[in-house]
Length: 296
Image (cartoon, rainbow, N blue to C red; front, side, top):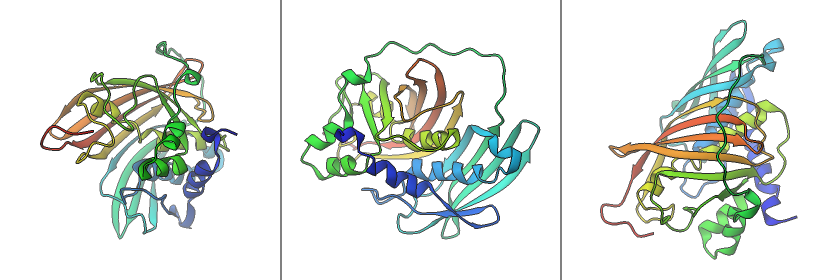
């Protein structure tokens, strides 16, 4: 088994996403460790999806999430439990809508509305996936982190549940020479993900939050290691078009159409290995750079 195939980081993610019922339409969950001391946005978003999914009962349980819109309202406390309160907004003939608040100390840290649909036939077309190098020909983020003698790299080597492979220079250790606000990367879980589509769709929300704002960083010549940089997710929107499988490679084709006022917008189109557009994602985030020319 290669380092990129270690199941332990994924097991930790699956454990924290297994939230517990704490009352009618109410659930409680914990958090994964983070270097910055705040709850990871993708984690609380995935937990909120799972909480909403669990209120779809009986015949409605077969309905799958197809869209969400959420706001990250406050930083989460890693040491405090998170309560997920779900409001049943509507159960129609084909669609169900839920609002989920993730709450700590009586205040929401995330507010999300999600829509679920039963599996149906319909007209279909899809954008064509661009031609990019295969993931097997690109450097693994897991192997990169393992090669670096740095505490941050060691943390992500031990705890990163996904193998990420940029088609061009990554932003993990240094700015990219190409400052265009576009990039493409492959992502796959480091071990098979159990469960069905409900679990895989929630896991896509978990995974994508870590890369959504990278095109903004790339455009401004900074990396994740730039001293004095401050990045935080503000809101998040997702549309699932087709079934997803994070146990196989997914291609993220990303761009940032604008950044202004300390905010940047990231857009991603996610393709399956066989070229089908499976999801579209949008996120705006706070991006604050050092006052002077940043050093990587």
